[in-house]
Image (cartoon, rainbow, N blue to C red):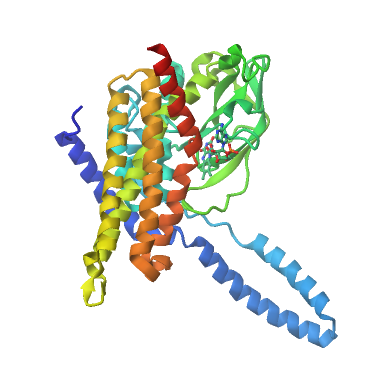
Length: 444
Ligand SMILES: Cc1cc2nc3c(=O)[nH]c(=O)nc-3n(C[C@H](O)[C@H](O)[C@H](O)COP(=O)(O)OP(=O)(O)OC[C@H]3O[C@@H](n4cnc5c(N)ncnc54)[C@H](O)[C@@H]3O)c2cc1C
């Protein structure tokens, strides 16, 4: 295994880096500011409104309970009336599309760059060093692309991969439902064949880039007789490509999140949604589970890259701060307590990167299915936790400044937390690693 980068890979990284520096870095804190901004508007409007209400109520000589009820009503109306602005980094995503990065995994015959997971990892790492929100917004390059790339028919690949590769169409992946998160097989969304169409009914929740995307890989039950824990379960689900604008496809409200606020998350509501039968992924019913697991095995390596990149960017900032910040007439980096933290952080960063590189290299070199699933779960689990630990240590190294939004460290701390949840929680990764380990032993 040789991780020495080729000249082309070095150029890729440098190109991504220059776009990130120009288009993304100056925006990073602004991407997260929306809620504060809205709070300011609210305050301004409210103060004006309260003054008016007070005046009116004083004139009418009413009791304070009536005043509070009127105020509450006003507050509800104002909240609804405020525009729902988007903080999605559209300009940056467009620029990445122009450079071909949205089609990095897509073969050249569908107008992509025809690269592997390793090259994809290099780009994702660079973006994640600066902003994990923007990296998640770019998940189209893996999650949005892989179901069609791995299981699509030739016609589906020609039609949809070329659109993604051009950078004009974003793509999303929808499996999660209210009662089917870690337990994917519990999904209830139903697809029933009706002539040349399938009719989909159900609701998907927490879908990244829902509403913004033009192409959706949506999974549904086509064979309810194949019970979730039975031998036939493998053929219970099927995937469908849905285009934005399909009658019966609607989107929920933009979710308010703890972190990665520049990545938009909404539900997908399917009401008698008629999808042409030619959009059944792979052209055959029952391929859903294999498509989901092939996609997640590879996209979890990308989450490893998100974690390794985020941890590395946070570490760099903490190291610079520790060298510059003086207390007791010394740089705080001269205190052993801080030095040990920096040493631990550097080990977390390097290990996260190595595990991710190993998994990506194995994916590109045809590792067997189970080995790849284990390596990708290990990389995702380790790198996600590394990013959280490094972000937490960075808050400590920055001291009070680490608690202030202006330092950018609170955003890093909040953003990192999602890594341990989406595309399979820590617990699910550990279940997966252990499942494969015990299987390997029982074969010996
Ligand atoms: C910001 C964001 C973006 C997302 N984007 C997408 C997307 O684009 N597409 C999509 O389809 N989904 C998406 N998701 C959904 C995400 O993948 C799920 O939230 C995640 O898989 C966990 O499912 P859950 O939230 O239902 O938690 P649950 O499954 O209810 O889990 C709750 C807790 O129980 C634990 N648990 C559950 N089962 C087990 C078990 N067998 N053993 C041990 N512990 C267990 C979990 O680890 C967790 O700690 C997104 C979620 C978020 C928050």
